[in-house]
Amino acid sequence: MVFVNEVAGVHGVPSWLKHVPADSNGMTFVDVVFPAFLFIVGMAIPFAIKKRRDNSSSPQDFWLHVGSRFVGLIVLGVFMVNSGEMNVEQTLIPKRLWSGAIYVAAILVWNRYPLTKSENWQLTYKVLKLLGILIFVFLFVVYRKGSEGQLTGMTPSWWGILGLIGWAYLIGVILYTIAPDVWGGMTTMFFIILALLVFMRSNHPSALAIPPWLQIQTMHLTHALIVVSGIVCAQILAKSGTAVNAKSKMLKMLGAGGILFFLGFLTLPFGGVGKISASPSWGLYSAGWCFVLFPIIYWIVDVQGSKKWADFLGPAGKNPLLTYILPPLFYAIVGYDIIPDILQHGTWGIIRSFIFALFILWIARLMTKIKIQLQL
Image (cartoon, rainbow, N blue to C red; front, side, top):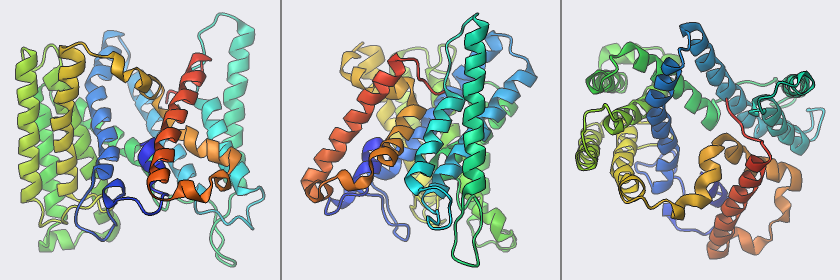
């Protein structure tokens, strides 16, 4: 995600390194990165819920945790979106300072502070969290966007990547708790969502009567479809799942991928392949690729026990939210004008983007070591 976000601003690079334009019918590997996040969210849900059940978490505590995580993703996503829409003349503080303060506040609010019995340290951590919340409130109050005579405060023109993940996460958790805790239950949920998606994207008179504001929400259904696919993958992998050994697990995952590709082909008439429109085919193809690629990783890491090669990715795995917000925080501090023109074009721009991604991983590793680890 860090690499593709960085290379998005580089000129003169191959089209397969860019997102497909919104009005095009197709996708590149870049368009699979975000849905891969959604797929991983789905994979994590069964294991996370099982852990909470094993720890005898009450239903109230469980849903409070889910709700707070959802709200956190929505808030951070909306703030990040509005950062790019600011009216810099009408907002009371400079854009870089406003944008940078978002991520400082996020670190203060959602850092996983060390457990301690010291009352002084406990008070310090509470004060830091409160400070982060106050920064968010201040940024919300002073923010302005729009033109003269039509100025507004912060509004969710869209939810941002984190916000979209938040909605998909909430829907995925609700569906998982409704459906039986077996593979068949979530497979049924998958086909219910898919049928609803196809209906809402069709030209059926009943579908055309659906209000436009509700029609737009079909993107959440597509994202939820990917999350549910990840849940099914996790249920295949689980020790008590449907597969008894590594070979059968990989075959079932590959088989699921093949089915998703076929369904993606069948649903092409309902919006083609589009990431921005979150068409059913795009969601199905993306989940299909995850089902094809994950067995390869599973075979290398779990079956063959080869893990050292991925150590450099450790910070992103242990501290993904921090890793995600570090690039905009970095540019809020140093500015974009520090990049020489030669490093914003072609091959040199691609190399610079890759090195920058490694640099972000290194910074994330250092911050993780000093106990800065975000957890919504």
